[in-house]
Image 1 (tube, rainbow, N blue to C red):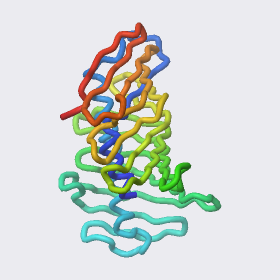
Image 2: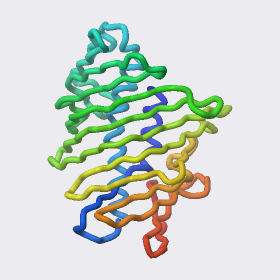
Image 3: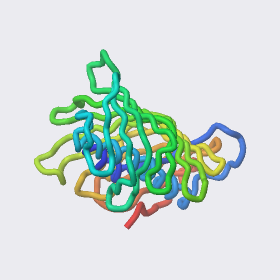
Length: 254
């Protein structure tokens, strides 16, 4: 779970979607892409909460921290947060319920949130986590199936539904370890539905702030673009490829 939390920061470069509606036919703009990429940071804050629980051994059924309490149930546990500070910024409040899946060869559990607050963001819905060995040697794989709604401070609503798989391959050092992301998911916000499909594994390293390679298809209101994250170089650049094969270089951050 701690590695899942670290992956969240890398996934800032990886969150966009599309829609089959026949409304606005304007292709995805650079500003719009930035907004969608930032959305993954918001939804990823949910994973940071789960990482906090597991790094402090939530299975004990006892108070694991001064600001939250974990109590075992027949099928999992509940965790109640009382103004906890995570990542030095976000105050977490509310109760979440975790249920473990039995009979699976992998570790599988579902976390359900009901009016759960991370800072001023309200979270409702569920995320199901599957954890197991990856296909490559020295690798581990996480799959996250989301069906969550995020209500921001300005009362705007973001809905995320779909599946992402994160495969970590461990190098000799943390900086040489890699993260590969695959999956398909949708994001609904501001009256638009964005559909994201990973066409070529999105790859990041822990020594670089952004994804370094991979292709992500992003569809919006019937039109789609492809985002190319590069050739493996550690930089903050990506390229949007429009349907007419026009290329536009963008920056992903600082």
